[in-house]
Length: 126
Image 1 (cartoon, rainbow, N blue to C red):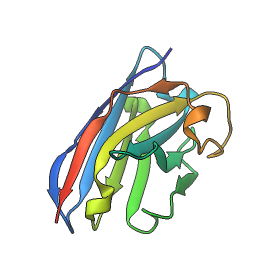
Image 2: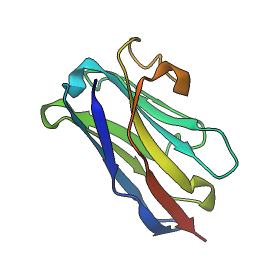
Image 3: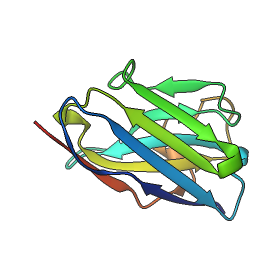
Image 4: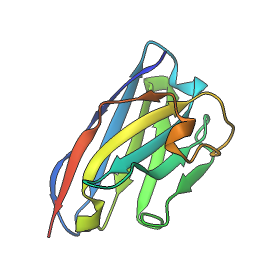
């Protein structure tokens, strides 16, 4: 099974940008739809963005649409997430996840993913 490791979290000022990376090992990233999720204290894990296997299709949650970019580099086994114009509500633990069972960007629920990284904390200060 693929192993995932996120990096790039930390403390960011509101209005700034966030750049996260997720590196896959043990299996080729190209086999999987990749998603970014986040979880805030007291809330359920929610989808942020999804990218298809070749990287040609993307999906964004309404909360980040228009200020976020998900991308992938299958040759480097890495998926990226950029969020601009950060607000305190973007605070949370960000996870990358892999799904082998769906097509395009169909996998938009946490239950549709079978492999998860440990997460990286992002805190947006107002």
